[in-house]
Image (tube, rainbow, N blue to C red; front, top):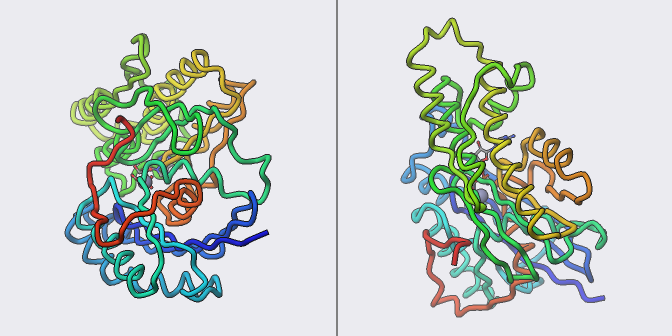
Length: 338
Ligand code: KG4
Ligand code: ZN
């Protein structure tokens, strides 16, 4: 069987990632996946400063591509294509990846495949050495990242129907903003998740907005406001950090699980695929599995939930929209809601 090799490049937010994937038949294998993060800087400043993130990425991108090729023991000439995140994301960051990919495609004489970052997240679920463990169509897809929260119905590769999503903040954003209010470092999701394990999720009553609405939309900004009011109206010493984290995490996860369950009742798919940074949360997996025992819940391993170039290369194997490299432009506003 013929082996295909793709170099993926991802720079939509604060990570700089390059990865080589091979595909033989249905088997997709990661040969290398380099992820350089400026998380230490973000943690120091409590969030991402776009200009600073892009500057770090300019320094990191070529070493990341070189390292990805070296670790995979692949020469540029062996590559079949270069896949790159076209959007959505921070424009300065996206430009670093897109312009690098264009230059490499031109120098090496390779085709370029633009990938929507949000679709890319879902394709982390297709990285597997066993065809039976990859998603089967039709399947429901829940994307939960730092900037997006969307529910879609996939009917095939590159074919999906948008069902709904957040009307304001994303689930990851809600974790991050709540963590900041509690004085925890960025990114807040993993911190809240860690402290939540020692807390009681029934300690604080936080809202679960739109739970009764007759659609698949969600809302998280009210929860952030409730946390803000609580923290500013109480002396710090009265608030139990572990209980607060457990209650915040439970409110976010309940909101997601309720809408996924509603979608699963409406669209009787066997598989539900989950993707994006918040998919790394163990409680989300547990709650989805216990609420939907007759469904197969597919979630990538945690390091493939957060931003990485392997998922971008994986998406490119199935969505071969080739484009003249000189016509490719970064698009910070790409979305799933067409
Ligand atoms: O997908 P991602 O790496 O970047 C974007 O495309 O936005 O997602 C980052 C988000 C952040 O909001 C982060 O707090 C959240 O994913 N996150 C988590 C966990 N790990 C990362 N949220 C909850 N629990 C986690 N274990
Ligand atoms: Zn992402």
